[in-house]
Image 1 (spheres, rainbow, N blue to C red):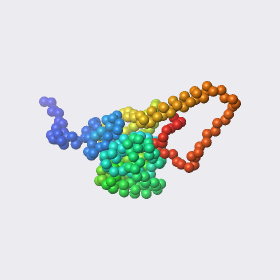
Image 2 (tube, rainbow, N blue to C red; image 1 turned 30 degrees about the vertical axis):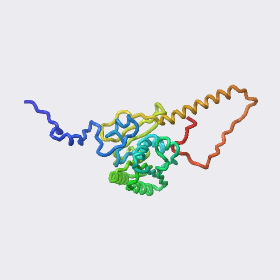
Image 3 (tube, one colour; image 1 turned 60 degrees about the vertical axis):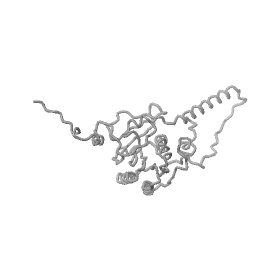
Image 4 (spheres, rainbow, N blue to C red; image 1 turned 180 degrees about the horizontal axis):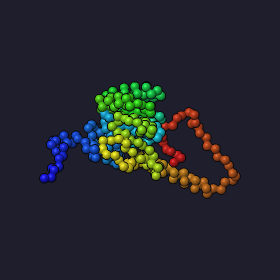
Length: 270
């Protein structure tokens, strides 16, 4: 007599089964989510978006690389839903207001906490998470320890706040209480794309990275138009025969006066 197969979930109700996660399946969201703004990425995240009330960790090659491009659609959505402002803790560059506003995030919806001390950044981040009027927190915490991240995770869960923590790529070798861990880097094959490696999620490992555009469609169009104008200008200048050889010096009038902006107008060297 053969042995009958046994499914341990068969005796559970349908509603209970939906809450049970099988290791070979993409898990269901156990909290509210906000869509990332990228269908390809949503398809690989439990529930189809960023988890609200949980820690999402972004591991970056440099502090400012691609964080805004990846998170801006969700941040704009959260603000437009009237959930409050976005708090930036330890941002490496000053946000460039016109670029953010053009993509739905007005500069008046940002609170920028500037501090270099790791303890002060952690304190500010925790206080922002406890504020009911804050929609999301973006924090650059390169030196945060596991216990400190766990405390931030608990604060985000208690107050149902979007929490994104940016850390260096080297942190991938250490453990983390983050619900999601993503490693974000410029694609080696195509610099116009970014590779999203999902290091931790409620679901099976992802064999290949998710590829997303490194710039918004509008920014790409502006860059293409700028390159075309420069090409036409060079062609027109090439039709004129120079009278004598000249040396052209480029004067940087802003050198030493102003730091670079996040999401600056145009990468003119591109």
